[in-house]
Length: 600
Ligand SMILES: Nc1ncnc2c1ncn2[C@@H]1O[C@H](COP(=O)(O)OP(=O)(O)OP(=O)(O)O)[C@@H](O)[C@H]1O
Image (cartoon, rainbow, N blue to C red; front, side, top):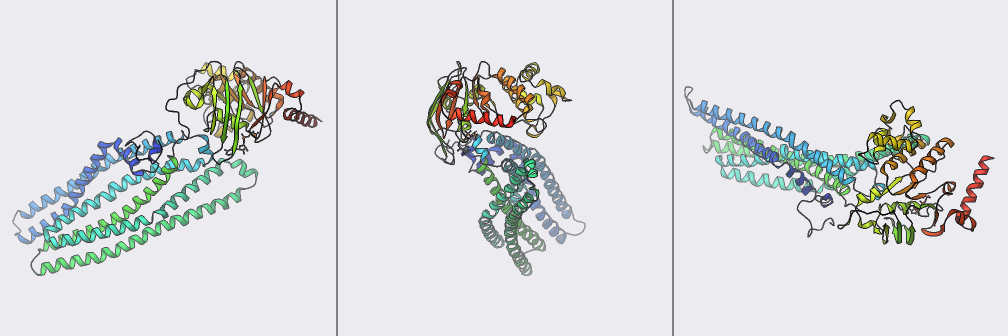
């Protein structure tokens, strides 16, 4: 569904990208999920404010009863009873509202956080390479905080003054219709002017929201790369850079706050002038006998409450506008449409041997960089293929395209004759196991990390995979064995150990196609031998595509594809390519002479 297409837009949809530019509809979606509680809250606040305004009328009744009756009469006690019941109802209803709010508002923020996380994790890798993780996670938090604030502000700060103003105007009309009309006119004008001015400040609040997200992003980037920062002695450089980012944020925040302060100042002046005028008017009515003492008290209390209500309302509306700005800014980033959704008629892949065909593919990165233009190759089932070639030739891109991380501009990639653009993502992921160059591990136990390959695998199957991947020697040395938590991205393990965990994970996944991105970092001979053995077992019986950085590992492969500048420039078994002059032979010779130099 293209975002922003009103003709095709559904009222409520599970595709969150529909809400990328519709913060109000987004809010309504979650409020509607807890409809009943929200209705109770609104009704309770309505009642509470109505009773609180009526309390002022109760005071007027009491004053008039006291002024009119003798000390023995029952009228003051009747007025007292009315007043007390208004006060009790007012307080009780507030508690009903806040009790329900504690449930409803928290549920709304929980629901939307889960939904945002689901949407966020549905984006293609390109989305994440263009954005800092800290910025994204802080936006999820910002969205949930903004919605919580908006709900709170609306119920406690926007609704009450609105209801109070309406109620006060009704009571004022009892004293003087003229006075009530004047108050309606002035309060309405004040609100419109305040709201307009508040709305023009929106870009300032947006700027602040952006700056705040940048500070978070910067922090996460540096904290996540502390080893790099330290290794380059860049701590004080990073401090200065961070200070500059914070300074920008402070500037934007100050601008946003001072704008609000100017607004409040203007309002305060209007309120003072108007309260004085109303009171003087009521006194003059009393002097001419057209109003009672109680009426003057009523005008005084109502006038003050209406005018302070418009102040609260204006301030609250400005705050709500600020939170709405934060919300819409966050939603437009988080809810951009998923780049790679399953085709509407996508079917599960049926594999019959795992033949991979690149059919005349053309691909350019989102930044416009063209990598392939009519590339073609066919990999037979069970074939072991090494991708080789100079840096930037397109090896990693080809493997990313096979995993459908990007959309092709032309051609097709087929697995067993089925176009991967037309199969379900889930079945594609089940068909391909990847052992990446830089093994990413989650900060969980080894057991959980290996089981990531097949979530329902039994403990015995996990052990088998760990044994197959030659993980046992190091797992046995860990005091907590498979229950050891590996640290952020697996920092508590060596590079070789992390790789063997990735191999175990692939063992467990047992997919017919295996993609290997060989680690470039040198490992000691023992670790390398263990990994070589583990890989040999893993490759058996599968179609294997390896990005090879050390060509010696390809000697036993069936076929080498040499890529240069996105073109297939050599293709054949390694022993044949070694007989002919060409890139592969040059690269192998260069590697051999480098190795023999190292030995010397
Ligand atoms: N995310 C990206 N956005 C834009 N261009 C990219 C991106 N990733 C890679 N490229 C470009 O695409 C070309 C192919 O890169 P690719 O990583 O596929 O090459 P490679 O053969 O795997 O190189 P290496 O051996 O250095 O890993 C390069 O020119 C690279 O700069």
